[in-house]
Image (cartoon, rainbow, N blue to C red; front, side, top):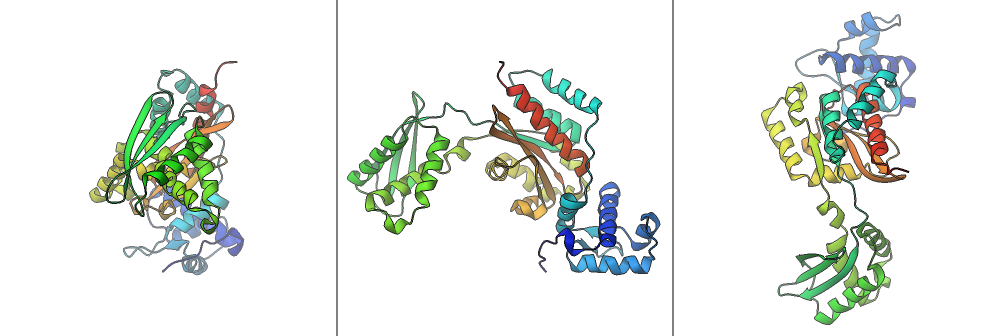
Length: 351
């Protein structure tokens, strides 16, 4: 059974109070919450029967669910989402906590700030942490060449920066002549030589937004070649540092050995994690994926809390934590936000 995400306007204040209490109590205790327990804690004169009716309404909306082994209820991913977006109260970190985090990060080896930021995040949150390594402005295209091979394959030769030569073989939708490939390479070299790979990709994406039917044959050839070489170039070459994966072994939600094994496999392969982290590059502040929102089955029991970091006002990477859905969002969110700001400050060049 699928549910559409609920908005805070769809549930009355009484239901909001009960949902907030249920999620907060479940995050704290990890046990299904019964109506009698809620009736004892909420500052409203409500009977357990009335609370059961409200809980039934929240369950119908997909915000809570009833485990088979208990009469109590637990929040669903949608319930957590509504809680985080509309009901969660996040207290700012104390001056002492801010000073301690700033001191710990600034005292570390300046040659490895990303590794140290990752270790700091995992230690403070007791979750797995990840910091993407930054894009480098020096990653500039110098020359590209395409050579036809058999079986609809093309050898690609790319020169990046001054002397870095990359060779790869791509598979194409049809066979291309040497002349067609030469024209495509000439266009790309004329349009993008000397430009950062990121700018090359953005320029090609703009080209691809044009109606393909209006392109001449040369441009269609160029777009296919470039799409296979450059569109995913940045993701393939990027990397991240990770710390605290073993912290997840103590989380009740992730105690299943097979789940942990699959999760660690994803960490090792990196591509899916990088794709997920890339979605936070353009975020303003903290971005949160809860459960299935990540789009990856292996993360359906996890939440990912991320924030971009920058140099000179330009976002160059993302850092964050991965942990069970039942995490202390009120604690994790300000820590991730502050660590991103501290790392940005540490990376700023001296005046």
